[in-house]
Image (cartoon, rainbow, N blue to C red):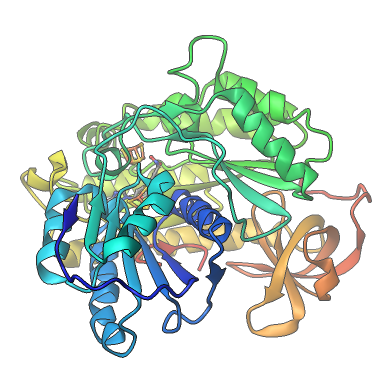
Length: 470
Ligand code: SAH
Ligand code: SF4
Ligand code: F3S
């Protein structure tokens, strides 16, 4: 669809800047957009005010995610006055909602291109069409039952990479917008995933993170021969690959088979992000999560029994409609029983169009804030206690970057996902290093390097998210 905005042909400045909001799914999409733009001869511009093309890849998970994006779009009104050749494109989850697109069309004339989560592959065509006549273009498909393969991907890190294994979500948790913004589940063919991982490894990548809204239901649409446990076992055979991570696991689909695969595959990290959302069976039912408090405890026990040294993290929503003090106390009880290493804790946010938005008994803000503070207190204590068990231990760290506030310190992650800071140098980046933990803090570990990988002494086999980790 094209809407008349101005009749002059824009001058093309082939530099781009992408601002990504939201989850790793969106980050991976931005890497693909960047890959396509570089293939068209565009260069990345780090200064958003100088770029010829700015793309905002949006997230709609909570109200303040939407507000942040609209604030960003608003700011481009003045940028465009000083830089009239700037092309402003907006894409991602917010664009899958017609009322938001309408709002942008009527209130934000500075936006030139709008495309949805199913239209990434059309970026070159859209840009080209826009450049021909300078008319605003909108391309949003409601859903898509195919996955466009072989898009170029411009990876942020050479040593680790995201690999999307499935798109969409079929679960319709009553609070969540994602099924509306990402459509139904579509799994990628295993050979396509295998090819992508092999290519990554050939390019020097040693860690992959498999992405999907619910990776445990991977392959449900591909017949009996394919499932997530099999995929893990298959990828574990890739020689030069060292670490396999995945997110997100839905507790309802975390089978014994998947837990066994994680336990038995040496490359699969002993780390599981398992969002429980609530500990109250009554609230879980209202959320349409399809598991009970007993199911959570059973899964967590099984994970701990089978996977030595495992770290488990979670997501919690407080203040879901109808959540009573008794329900909240059930959540606190489950947090204590499960001993989560850390958690992202969210205030329930109304998402228009979802069933929970119109449920009776919405919880007042002050009650939500009180509950989030009380859960964080419990979560922080647990994180602190678990981290203390790392004191004086030797852990294997994949070094990721220079520490934000000290160029002589490096930062990386253990297989269990713990953030470790230690004195080192840039040549450590992208390698696995053995580090002895000298100080265990609540949100990170400090240590000192004791050598390169291979020493088998390891004893530990933007948001509005208030993380027990930040
Ligand atoms: N597919 C993943 C979660 C993706 S969204 C899963 O099911 O676990 C990431 C997190 O955002 C969710 O786990 C949930 O805790 C939170 N979230 C989603 N919708 C929300 C809403 N309306 N209000 C507050 N938090 C929400
Ligand atoms: Fe949202 Fe639930 Fe799907 Fe996760 S499983 S993306 S929370 S609907
Ligand atoms: Fe991710 Fe936000 Fe969309 S969390 S799937 S970018 S709504």
